[in-house]
Image (cartoon, rainbow, N blue to C red; front, side):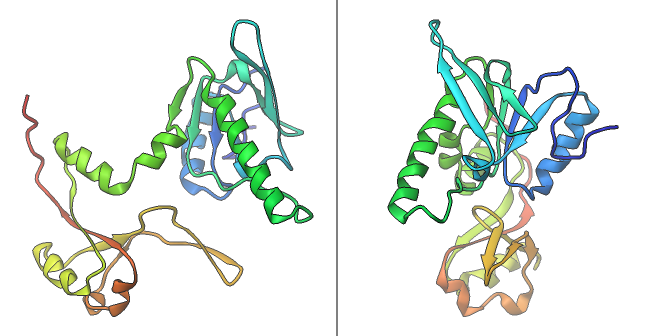
Amino acid sequence: MAPSPGQSTRGTKTPRVLVITYALDPTADYVLRELTDRGVPFWRTDLADFPGRSTLTAELRTEGRWGGRMGDELRGVDLSEVRSVWWRKPTSYSFPDTMSEPERRFAASQAKGAVPGVLGSLPGVLWVNRPERNADCTKPAQLAVAARAGLRVPETLITNDPSTVAPFAARCGGHIVTKVFGSIVHTEGGKRGQLYTRRVPPDQYDNPRIGLTAHLSSGRSRRRRTRSV
């Protein structure tokens, strides 16, 4: 029986792909289903599992390599067998309520130094993408790099001025969408939801609440440009 999406393959194969993302990540589910179909072993976890539900034990070997294991009671990875790390959208480390706020902050700093630190120092590992690279990889930067590379990118407006939205929409044929800059996960009133990309109706172009923060809108794609050599 094939493993369910989001779980590691079992048997004699050692997980070689480490996937770090939040539990209800549908995009990761699709990718991991494909890895399962291809017979690629993996182990999926989240930073929120550490240290309550998962453990890390790493020892520095004489040759300067870290050895040990990261895992839970049922599954895990031998650090020497990790060949790829997919660092997607992990949530924060989780600590017991019995700890004070200063204790939790200190514990989080220690976990941040240990988990990404050990994983990031493993040799010959392909990362998609390293946390420090993700921090620098914002949507404005991504779009600018893609355009310079000659890729097709959408007409894009970033603004907190409601008066600029209608003219932008007119240039895009009256069809624009809005999307968030960071995580789509949103919690309000104890309920967790997701803010997906959605179309902006014309009656919302001049909504004064646009002025409360920055918004990103996209319209029709620009024509593909030929990259100069």
